[in-house]
Length: 100
Image 1 (cartoon, one colour):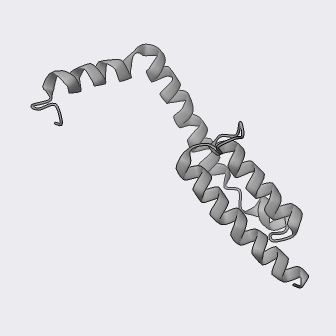
Image 2 (cartoon, rainbow, N blue to C red):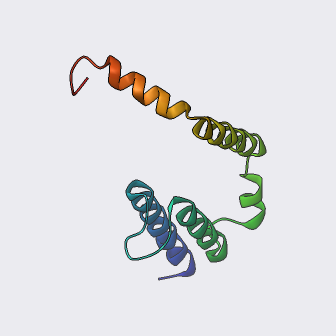
């Protein structure tokens, strides 16, 4: 196999592995969660030369990162305030059947 064939094989393996791990939520036998899987696979793609460093940096969207960070802050405050417990209690009270 030539160098580009190995890069292509690594890209396919990283893609399939990352989607499998993201679907499972973690990697069995390892202490890696979804975020860790994404970082490891992205690093493998850059190190192996499948994607260049400049292309990897250009693919990061700052607007999306700011949106996600803001959503995490709002969700954390909603959890601390008990909002999700209130919504859950309301849903249980108003469910017509056990399966809703």
